[in-house]
Length: 161
Image (cartoon, rainbow, N blue to C red; front, side, top):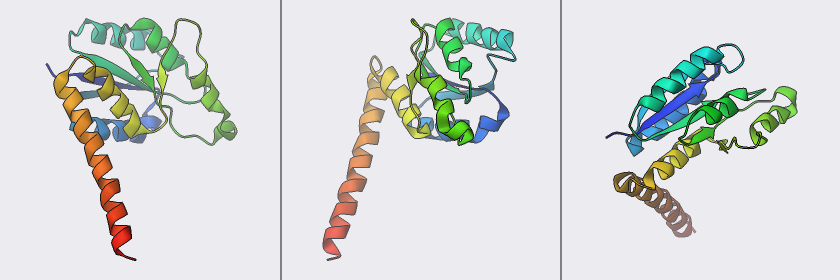
């Protein structure tokens, strides 16, 4: 059963950010669905989406993308029993202070915060890998490739002296 990564963004303005996460999730074997929903403006639509996904028996992780007042991540986390990762888009608005809406959540609401899109996909893969040996092996292969890149770069620098 292919694991599902649901990327829920607050508006179409977040699409490029969502696509970075989706691209990073592909090598791990996720089926990715990108949706738009606002906890402030279309709460019933978001709730309908979450209810639909929660009925899906596949292993899943949600990644929420919302800036400014990040109600989407907390709302999502409070409505689902599976992991939620919040990956807010980069922002210079308010001097970057809008990140605080992703840092502090009410008690009982616990989305993980990851700022880099590729790292959000990696964390989702590690979460699924807890009980999926094939996913765990894809994570290990990803880590080995990263390590090899650094070792190759180090060797190249040493040989150029």
